[in-house]
Amino acid sequence: EQVFHADANGAVTAYYDNSAKLATTSTGIDVTGSVVADGGSISGNLLVGTSSASGKLTVGTFGDTARAAQFHGGSILLDGGAASEIIIGDGNVAYMSIQTTDDATAMKIRNYSGSADLVTIERASGNVGIGVSSPAAKLHLNSTSTTAIMFDSDTSTQQYELGVGYGGVGTSSFYLYDNTANATRLVIDSSGN
Image (cartoon, rainbow, N blue to C red; front, side):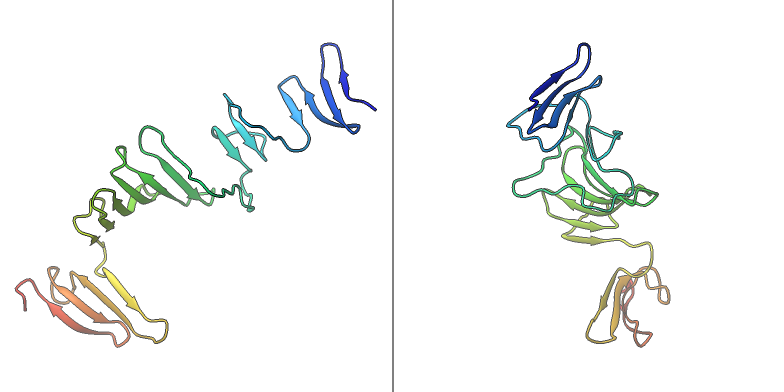
């Protein structure tokens, strides 16, 4: 039964039950099976399921549809000394991201492809902004269209809009619109009428 095999100026191979498990190569080591360690560090890139690195940790290859990572218990810390960001996308052109600001005063959900903040949550105040990068209230909405909030019922066909800037009355108005009946139900203009 073979335990070790060593070649002069070549590989050293360790066996378990006549199966090669650990071998040195010209670029490092090859392991067949699982590695269990109680510590360690890697100074270069770590590759899992791939042969080329696109970052310090690269898991899988482009087009993989299987779960790349799974964590149980504990916490995951992202601390880059500046803004930290998790970028999620289809590997092609559409990307979204979750980002903290440089001083971690806010967390943002962003359209990474278009470099736009979609949702902002401020750490100190708890204010949430949708379409607003610095929310001034607990919920602060801004829309480039006239609809700010839409209410829709799963149990009926009723659908209502609530917003500011109703085009039929003026850009400074507040309105309630019934999409089902295609009718304005309430309009308050800038004069309070």
